[in-house]
Amino acid sequence: MNHRTVGIITAILGLGGLIALLNASTSTPVIYWPIEAYLGAAFTIGWLTRLPAWFVYILAALVFIVMIVVCYMLGSGIYRLLTRPR
Image: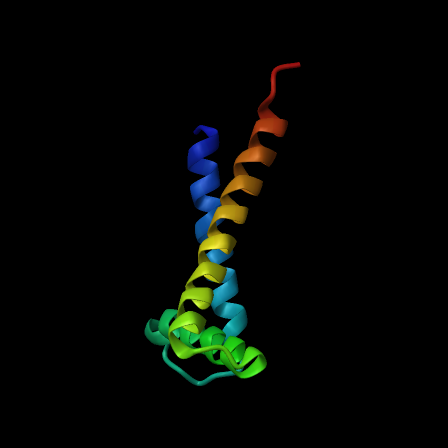
């Protein structure tokens, strides 16, 4: 297993955790959780900032993309630190 594989696994787990966090109090079926999380994030951003709808959807997508990238970098970085030759 290399650092890229661990980074991808960490990114998937982080995204799943974010989606579960945003849907913790809903009674929506699990299959609809990703779209509900995206629309909930877009609603929250739009409600708090009063930005145009098209810009809010882009910002909500960027939030998820940034979350994936940060989790990937954290996972691969920690794996490199733990497996570094001494």
